Image 1: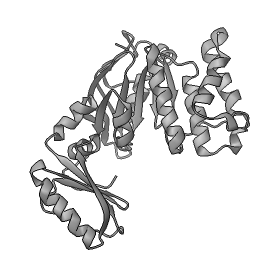
Image 2: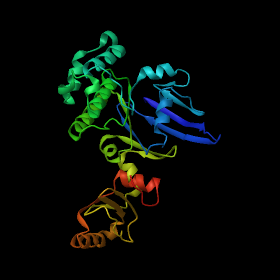
Image 3: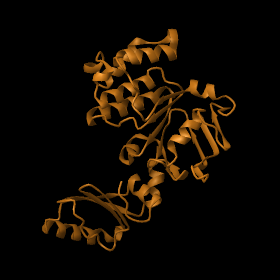
Image 4: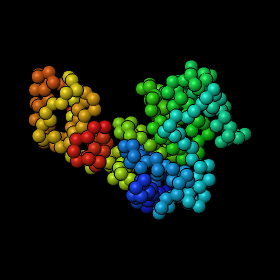
Length: 310
């Protein structure tokens, strides 16, 4: 086991001296070579938990163990074990991606730094065109990929990636996920911190849904989806962003721009398809698709009992 978090609670005192609980009795573990997703909206408590794993802040109660030793007793050791890509952009200044990644690699690996690994990373992520370009002249996506390479050029036993695909184009996003999966081949474990539900489902071995400081559920994607396993979901492409009347048998729903999603009982599949066909005939929707429940459905079901916008 790489990481074991046991009943961790962390609170802060607000401006009005009100106690705000950022993490509420959180327990989880991460095994060797595992990609573990922390899934939740901004403010859910993900970053607070990560900062405690890194020994940057101390829990009010509970314990965190990395490779069998308490982070509370040796926070500096925790930071030597972990590699981190923060959510915020890393300021590169006039450094090129190649210079920045090389610098971090030499700092972490010393004489064991392997320059060939840098070339392999840049090739895998198709970053050749930016390798020698000054950081100030890079796009947000190129800076994000550079920060990722800085985190994994000489990875610790636990790599923490906070929204690694922000600003990254769809093609290189696929390359990045493959590099992340390759990281685990030698036993490296990964924590993926994200609010992107669809990416999490494809990338992780296990996932925890965290909301208002508490873990609502955790397990493999299949186990998490089992909470709504008796449901189906329909996805609609709307002809406009104007609201349309959702059928009474919809169990939950949410809208994202011109896309509308709602969950249904399998017994309502026929009625739902007939309803969708009528909306197409009326010109209200362009197309629709029906599929089994996803982690996104479980996320919505667990965090809200009403329609929400993500």
